[in-house]
Structures are given as C-alpha cells and as structure tokens.
Image (cartoon, rainbow, N blue to C red):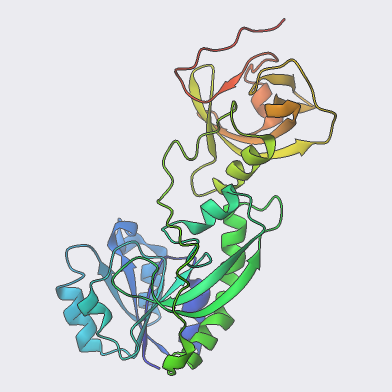
Length: 320
C-alpha cells in the first residue's frame, strides 16, 4: 500500500521502520515548526539519505502546495503520528483510504494534544493507543484499533511514551490490513467525551497547599521530560522537580505544606505534604543544572525553608 507518513521523530520511528521495511513507504512529512534547521536535522537528513522524498508542512502551505504535492503523489493512505496542525477536509479526502492518526490516549475521553500528560497527572492506571480515522475536527473520527497500555506506578511521561512508541510496529501492520474494510471502523461513543487542552504553566505547577503527596508525584511524573519537570519556587526562584518518591512513615503533624523537613548532603531532601505525608526529592532542574536532591542541598537549601506555589507567596520563616 502506497503510504505517506506525517510524524514527529523519534516517536514515530518504529512506524517509519515498519513501513520502509515492507516497502509501503512513499514519503515522510514533518511539521516545519519542529525543524528549525532542515539541513542539520538528524531525522530529516537521514531519511533523505535513505532515498525517501520529504516535505515540510506549515499552516500556510497545508491547503495549497502541500495539497498539490499530495495529489501528485497519489497515496493510498496517510499515517499521522505527532502533528499539531489541523488538516483541511479537502486534503483529508485526497488519499484513497484517507488519513489515520495515532493517538496516545483512549478516545473519546482523552481527546486533545497531550493525552498522556493528563492520564499520568490524574493517576490513571491505564491508557491506550488509539488509531482512528481523521476528520475535520480534533480526535473525533471513527476508531480502527485500540490497544490498552498499563501505566505502572512511578512511570514518567517519557517512559510511557517510549513504551507506546515501541508497540506501534505491530499495530500499524494490523491497521494497514484492516483499513480496506469500512466495517473495521467504529464510531466513537457519545458518552464520556473530554477534550484536554495543552497544559498551561499553572497546570504544571505544584500546589503544595491543595495537592496531596500522590497528586504531586503524579504531576512530577507527567512533566518529565516534556515539560522539564513540575514547577515550584524556592526562595523566590523557579525550579523544576523531575523525580520524587513517597516516604513510608507515620503522618507528620504541625508543619506547613511545602516545608523542607530534612536537608542533608548524604541523606537527601525531604518535603512535607498535605495530610502529613512526606516526599523525597530525588532530582531537580535549576539554574545550577540537573541535580540530585543531595547535590541540591549543597547549594544551601535549609530545613525549615519552604517550596511555594508562586513567586508571590511569602516565604515561610526559617526554623532554627
């Protein structure tokens, strides 16, 4: 089947390898905004060296020169795996079997540009890879395939994303076999429809006063690595927390949420959370670099200081 791939690398690398191995691949397209320097982009230049045609799509050419290019190539199918520009209806109609999108979330309850972030942030135990027909709206087309994917406690967005990417080879092969039969497509349910926007800075910022230790751990995992960690503030400066782990202990009372209750250069950095739970801070990104909790202590962080939700929140007094 003559197939064109529109994708973001390395997420769709297994799709590229599968299509090229079976001689189904005709060309590869990229979102131009993700390729600031085409002549030095590893994925673009590597694919060109392997003999495949490439095309850079942007909002201006998607319904003009790209449409003409697509018509001239006359593909049977276009596969999309990581693309944030809405594709016009007249372009979707060009391939014989239309466009199929690979969505890293269960539909229709995980519509939107970053479903995996929200699944991990919300503490979901399971997500899905959904391959669906593309239409003129976002993530609303008929479903061709759905593969459940467990989210193991402690997994980051990057870990789950990689795990799902490795699963795409077999799913794409199955999708190509099924796409011929219109009966293989199922309309999305009309219940439990939720669309999640791309996370804002507020969404990726820890709220020590309102979030539990579990919720903070989920947020930290959801922000690693795509958003550089979950945002918090120390002594008025923003930092990003990349990894935490829960401490199994009796609830501690009489402290302030976000308060550093232990800071030791060998034993590490421990923070008090809502309901008396404790989190150990394992990795932090700051102006000093990406540091372990123990190394961050060396910068002068002190017991009794507090992490805060925003720069405007008054710093707690130091307990000596």
